[in-house]
Amino acid sequence: MDQAKTYMPNAGSLADRVCKFFADNPSEEMSPADIAIKFEASSKHNIKTLLGQCLAHDYLVLARDDDLEWVYGPGPKIHLYKPQPEAPATVVPCWPATEGEEKPATTPRRSPTKPTPLILDNITIDDGIPLHAIEHRPEALARFAVMSNLLSKMAPKQSAGLPLDAYATLTKAMTAAHKAGTARFAIRKSKATRTLRVWRVS
Image (cartoon, rainbow, N blue to C red; front, side, top):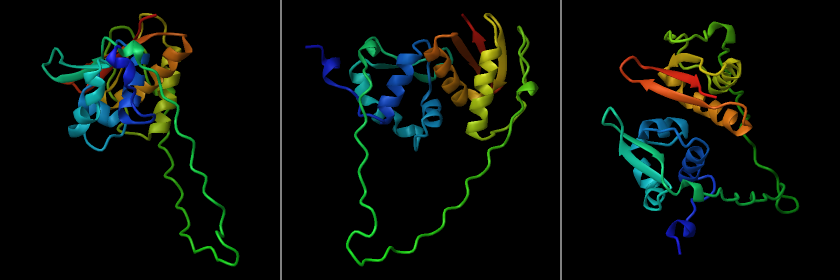
């Protein structure tokens, strides 16, 4: 029996999310640092351990890129990956657990930090001209909205330059666009200038 068919990452695990990303984006590659940022892993140093079974079963590959840095990509058996259903949520009994028992005092929740707004019109879409970074680490929710709108405005063969720290949010927006089947995109990074460029390829 094909060994890859006997193993599937646990639902919601880092391995499961990384396999799902590469199954949806077979032309992409990610360094351990990219994976740690995109999937909010605690450290890039234990990525190889957490993805070890995926490498062993050929869902993923680990190789050096043109800059001789280690990067992950889809393996020859990534097409066999099947997302696993998540376990049902645990039902917590309503308080009080027993009659007459009082509910303990709880600490009021603090309001979440308001995301820093971004303005779509401040991002230039051009042909062949690098776009300098115009923001520094805005909130993830605002960044995703801007990236999604940016991709929707691009025509085939157009490209846009962005700061390198937009990579994680941009790949999420690309995954959503690829799933919708409306367009395909590709990314190239420049570590020397700390920038990246995204092209609409179809």
